Length: 345
Image (cartoon, rainbow, N blue to C red):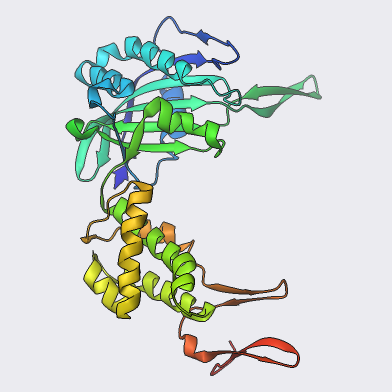
């Protein structure tokens, strides 16, 4: 887990990075950012507050990790923190080179050094890379001589970090541990921050494995299962509910136990295993047969496991268990569901 409560902002540099396709260019600062105690506290909240997820990444390169430019510049800063300003120039130039999509907004780019960051049992230094792209309108109320005047100003809302990445000085040989925020544009052009500039991929940990197996299960139940077997919507909902129950109640995942308690039927288990192999190949991921279940990943994925039967535009039936209390039929009026219950709540 991450705890940035005691993190100390030690050094920072800021540059303006434009859109390369628009030939905006960059505006480079001539010196590190000069901060007083108040501004240091404000910027620390702005930079650190959004990072709550336990979804971790690491830098990678198809040929050699040292060819990843951000990894190289970050390593230089960790080796010599006094080089932060010089390396911030390199990072800003690299960001500009990867800001070619016409929809990418220009913005302020920060390189920040932190001490006393806690992650997974260790207190380490960290480097933050942040970009502010959007401006909000703020009102300034000015009282003067018994008269109030109002002025508007454009500025950065410190409660809305657009893009960020914190790299912890841990697992260097594997590409460090990083956590990423991207709150602007979910379209293809937005991927420049994660894929093109940072060039990071998911860290192979319990969070990632839990997230993958739950995504696989939902995809199998909703897409593959109805094609292979004669299942009702209620039966699909039951499997989804059983899988969520499994992940919430268990501390460890094993494929054998999951098959036995959730999938159950031998022919469905065989189909699930085949689908799992295909899912891994298609998404270029690896799913181990056993791992510790991540509680935070379960909490996040459970939001997508809503077991709902949608009937035209008139009714939604939410199923939380026991599909045997639901009967489906058809008469002269049309199709129907019959629901059994003990008491009305």
